[in-house]
Structures are given as structure tokens and as C-alpha cells.
Length: 457
Image (cartoon, rainbow, N blue to C red):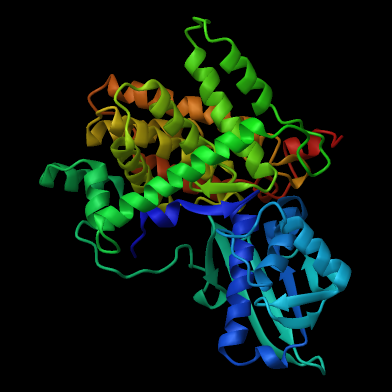
């Protein structure tokens, strides 16, 4: 199994990679399948059922809307985020869907997109089933999918062990653990970003990879800019006011301030801006998920603004090193809040950002691994209990806190020689086991924690 950095980092739509991006991709895949198998012309109705965490918090995460958009042939990378809600509203009002963009079918919002709050499919908490019917009501096609975190989608036929998208491309330097990665670095005299680069070349040239990674960086910067400019209240009913614009004005106006923690204020700003955009359904980069999308961009912005000599080469190396760590989480544990809690989202992102920053600050492979371990170790046990099922409270602030934590983890690691008692592999194993022990109500169901102790008003 091989994963690319461009699998971990992809352009999507808010507010959730597992609950919005994944369902949209799955719905489009189902619609494309109808077209490819010749069944589309006979289809008069399409139904979608969402289970588990998708059913429990799907309304707040926009899962129902994402399914409608996906069935109509739209993709998270390219959908017009400014008109997405209007397109869904039009489909409900007109009582019709245009499957794959052109084939008309009848549509009843209440009956054709069903969210089951207490039912689950067997393989993963984020399950969904799509069904195509003919004019007599007979089932033409039925397929289930699982959204396994970070926008990754697997077919329901893959079985209960399907946690990653299979790619059997042989890599020059394959690794599945941090220990294996460090051994490659020692044996070959390579940095972690060097190893990732060599592996990435099996899919695309170095120039193509660099271009794609810098495009992602451009989307991250645009997301921050948009978040700093957009005033108002976030959608969803919690009446959460955007804070990034006022903080941006304060920081840019007070240029003469000599506060020694000034850099931390900017890091907070970057993270808030991204996650407020995500909560509003804007364009973001999964890093590795939407719920944790502000951490890698915030730390990258810190690198670009506060580290002398920062350049595009550093950005590329940062993202490659971060992706190496993200791959370890993906294949050995999970990046899905519905499966292991927020430790799998914010914890993984904090670890990735710490590794990326340590790499570009000159850290050895051992120091980079140490930084990643510190980043996850101090997020172990973090629950996912979004108030109102919205990716707002505590998610937005949590990204700001974890961004600062990632920078601190990198700096701590750089003051050591890379040796430490708890390895990254053991920390990831612990995260997986902690997630398995965690009660379901603390894993993106909004049935525990803050979600039940905070009045939604």
C-alpha cells in the first residue's frame, strides 16, 4: 500500500473532510457508476442513507447537502463554494436532481436523503448507502461506501478492515513505521523529506510535485486571506462570531508593539482564519482533515513570516515531512474523529506540523520524529464532541491551540539530540488503542462532552 503527500493534502470544501468531502466524493462515484454501467437512463429516483456518525452529526456537517451536490456530478475540489447552498436549495425546491449533471430524476428532500442517528454500518462509523430505482420502484443498483477520514472513501465491498485506499505502486523506500523511516534515513544519509520526495517520483516528476504542493500552499494562503476578510456570524445557529478579522486588524495596526509573544498571536490568527472559513463551507486544504485544517497552514505561515530565509523550497520540504508523519497515522491508526476522537484529527495534524517545522528548521530525522511524537503525545485522549454537530465549538479554537503546541514541539525537539523514551510508533499505537477504548458518544456523535453540557444558543 502506497500513499502520496497529495493523498494527505487535497483541496476540498468545508466543514468536514469525513462528513462533507467524503460523502460528496462517494455520491459522485455512485452517480458515475450508474452512468458507466448504462443504468442511468433507466433511473427515475436516487436515495441516500447516512449511518453512524454521518447520521448523528450530518446535518451540522453538511453531509446531506454534500450528497446532493455529489449526485449532481460536483466535486469538492471544484464546486463553487459561494453557490453550493443555493444549488442544494434549488434541488429541494424544484423536487429534482440532475444526476451526473444532466439526467433528471424526481427528488424528495425528506425521503431521499435519510440520516440514521442510531444505526451504523459494520465496517466504519461513517457509512452510507446509495440506491437507484426505476419507474416501478425496483432497485437498479445499490452500493455502500465508507468515509474513513481526510476525504478518503472506500467501497463497502472492501470489508470491515478497509481503512486505507489500496495502491500497490512499488516505492523505492517503502516504510510503514517511524522506525523503518528512520532506518532508511540513517542507511541512505537522507532527510525525511528526501525519502518522501524519492517515493513521490514514482507518480510524478519533481517539477510536477513541486507545482502541486505549491498550489496547495497557495490555497492555504488564500484561505487565510479570506478568513481575515470575512466578517459576520458563522452558519448553523450557534451564533459564533468570526474573530479572525478583528484580530487581523489589531495585529496589522499595532506595528510598533514589542510583545515577545507577538508571533503566537499571528499563529492564532492564521488558524482561526482557516477554521472559520472551514466552518462557513469555504475552500480549504485537508491537512489531513477539515476539522484540523488550520494547523499545518498556521505553522507554515509562521515559518514563512518569522523564520529568516524561508522560501518555497522550505515549504515543499515542510509538506513532504509532514505528509510522511500523516501517512504513519493513516496506516497505523486513524485520522477520523468518528473512529478515534479528535486525537486522530487535531492530534495527527499537530504531529505533522511539528515534524514539518522541525525539518525546515534544520532538524535531523531523529529530531523530526521526536517533534512528531511530542505533538501527538500531548493530544492523546482528545475527544470529538462538537456542540450542535457543527465544526465550530471547540474545533476552531482547538486548531489555534494545537498550532502553537506544534511549534513548541518542534523547538523542544531541536534542543535535544533526537533521543527520547516514547517513540512515535508507540504514541501512534497508543492513540489507536485509546480511540478503541473511547466511548462512542465522544467520537463525533455530539452525544457527550461539550455537546451535551453547552446550551446551543
